[in-house]
Length: 160
Image (cartoon, rainbow, N blue to C red):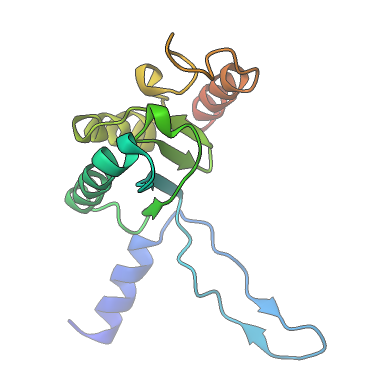
């Protein structure tokens, strides 16, 4: 594959993604190039070693996300990151999807395909995994969770 073909392929892969502008250093004519790929979504998976649920299930969920993203060729749009303690690990493994800031709990590897298909590709929150929606979730009465769900759904409807 020649340089021209590689450039065209890279351009197609980044089509539709917002470019982050270069930044000028204060008091200088030099520009800093963006070194971070402009991901559309970022998935954080808790693997906190102090939490029984996250320590046991988090690494498996992380691997499942990595495998699913690779299989669907979403690596240029979706980034998956292993994180430590995010709170609420009693209902872990926890998964947080940005930029929507949707927080899923008790995620199992079997749930990953549904999160990818529904949330990542279709923009629909997976209600059954959403923190704050279950009786045993101490966040069940959170004032932020339900408005967040409505906001995410409205945003998804706007873009679809």
